[in-house]
Image 1 (cartoon, one colour):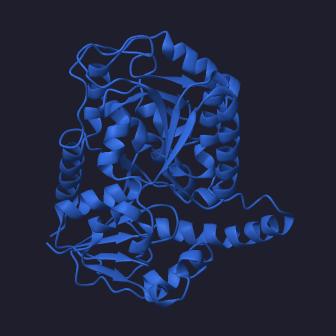
Image 2: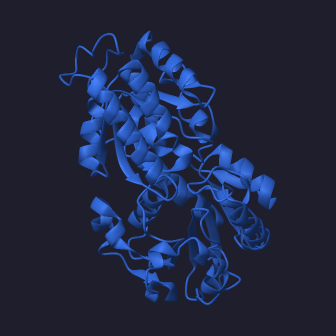
Length: 393
């Protein structure tokens, strides 16, 4: 069975790329078709892709393409239609919602499956990294372009034989915008080899886990530091409560200047009230593991999240989650048992949630057992079983 993997582009390392990586672990000989591969922008994660058979498009040869990925989406229908997948028996598309990677030529008997992380957020009114509605010209131009792109996106969505959604949240979006049914297979999360959860006992801000030698000293936030993640709320809330917070990750389009301002704000307050916020930039998996082990809780104020791997990662370490009640995170955090939700995107609502969590005693064992539902082994098995049930060879 000849398998091909398709991904919008490889420039960042997040949840979608973890899914692609897991798919590649199943079919390690499968070529990966992508518009652009930019390893220099992958930071400590670039070695993950070094030995892959990655086949890029002509966009790869355009100078400064890393700055043109957003307008280049107008060209992607021609890119994918010019690729010929006739030699493959199964094509698995990992669609991040950036481009329209289902527009390609294949044999009628070839099985075409789309693992959809989300329909394009910028086309359907969901918060995006760049606020393109901020200025009048950008808003008018964007609306005109998006009307045409929605037609292309709908056409692209009719090509796959089957859809897989990464959450019930995304399944509902696929049904709403594409009029297609989808099977939910949650993304893979490392819960065994790299993760070292507490042996048991209670985890709270008032008392440490008696079986853990690692002192829980700070709150944690981060990941893709983009506008919809609302990292600013975590910073402002911890500054207000004078709580230590570590922020990790790399800034993305539309949020760099905002975070620089917040860093200056945190520094100014630190001079008066003691150090509260530390920015630790993009980090390796091992460095992230060390951060999780020392965290009191993960603060996750992301808005209308598609799935959200970080809350599951945190729980795999026995770390509770403080999350905005929105999107896929409602499927991964058990309110009052493995974390707590807040209902308004403002500092007051978040600070109340932090104080409420401080009064709870969260069992690390409960967090870890909940995270196990989203393991990589489970993902691989469900993906393989799904394809076996649909194969037409």
